[in-house]
Every structure is written in C-alpha cells, then in structure tokens.
Image (cartoon, rainbow, N blue to C red; front, side, top):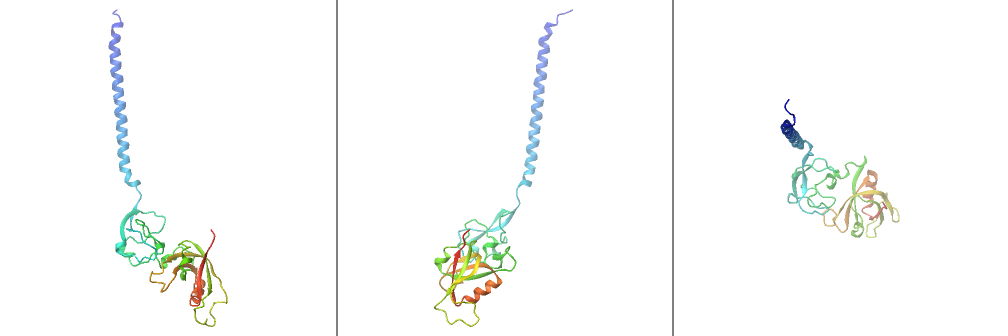
Length: 226
C-alpha cells in the first residue's frame, strides 16, 4: 500500500481553496445585503421627510403696528407642523393687516400677530379685543402676552362727566388680569394723539366699561407679578 503522507499537501491545498471560496461567498452575500438595505433606505427616505407647506414670512425686521406690504413679505416652504397657527400661504392674504407684535426677518406670519378678530382666536368664549390709550412711559413696561391691571384716574382736562357714566370720584382698578394683545406705537395712525394704544383681551362688559370711561379718564396699567 502506497504511503498516505505524500497526499497530505494536496488535500491541504484543496481545503485552503474551499475556505477561500467560502469566504468570498460570505463576503459577496454581506455586500448584497448591504446594497439591498441601502436601496431600501433610499426609497423610504422621502416618506420619512416631514410634510411641508407654503407660508408667508417677513423678509426684514418689522415693528409692532406695521401695516404689512407686499415688499415686506415672501412665500417660503416650511414644515407643515408649526407651534402656532400660521396665516394663509398667500402674500395677498395678509397685505394690509397690522402687526400686533414685532416680526423678525425670516419669521412666519402667524394669526396671533395680526390685529383683528384673529387676535382673540383660541381665547375663552365671550372674549373681545378692546383698546385703551396709555402714556408711552407706561406702555414701555409691557409686551404682548403680559397680564396687566388697568387703572383709571380722573382726567382734569376732560369736560363734565355725563350722568350715569361709570366714573366714580378717584383712581382705581377698572379691569384686572387682562391679556395684552398688542402695544402699538403712537404714530401708528390709530391713536389720534399722544400715548400708546394697548389692545387687550377682555370680556364684553369690561370692554363697555372702558369705552364709557375713555372720554373722562386717563388709563395706566400695572404689570401683574408672574
């Protein structure tokens, strides 16, 4: 019987080739799996992107009280989910509306920033937007979103108080814990005189009281502690 030892090198070479072939097959399989995973991720990527919508944004810093013009605005694509309700996505839909608060460059125009019925959207039923004129020094203490007390004091320059007017004889708080919606500058075209126009959210009865007092009283506000 011929010796077996001379055949061992042949068997070792064959085994080595099989091992190398197996490694190549495993590597090819792993590469194929990686390619399939990559293609699947690329196809799924568009579905993972958040939906977007067209909104109107400011193209420059705009102050409170500004009447919006087409030259102030542009249409941009933004994520559909925003922390605040945005205004309609057409520039023409907000041109001519007045800002209740400053708007920074690139910031979207939100409904709460537009003076009008939208200013009280989302507040308690029966809430209305009312306005009072206060000294500029007083208005400088408050910003939209603040809670204030409204104080009325006799106006010595006013005419005779008509019978039945809700005035009283001394200064006092006439509205408590009201929300400031806007602080408009004196030259915004609404005040018709000196001072600053504060737009506040009140109940209907309080709004009537403030309108009744306005010709005969001077208003000021006291900022409530947080």
